[in-house]
Image 1: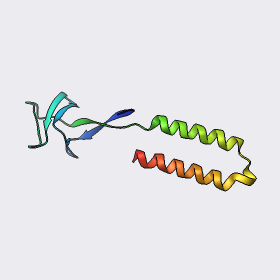
Image 2: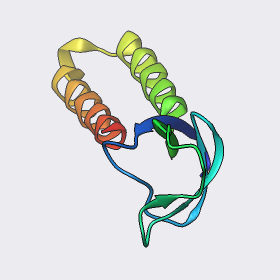
Image 3: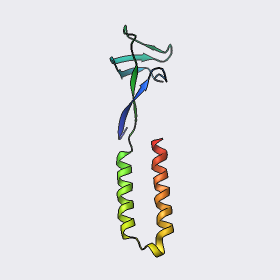
Length: 98
């Protein structure tokens, strides 16, 4: 992934979908989804790290553009269009985050 981050996922919530090695609270462990089994002698795996997209750069860029545009805007003529564009862009970024 271009920009990514890792989030902790509790093994009681869900397990990985792909056979691979995953960082866990006890180290790098192989997980096999076919039999939903962690290949370890240690049974105390509490979480694994899941790679997810990180939209921080996009959010910063969108907010910087909005601030710049809104400070230069002629509010009498462009207020509704400016507000609508900002809301649309903000909703797009927020939907990516969810």
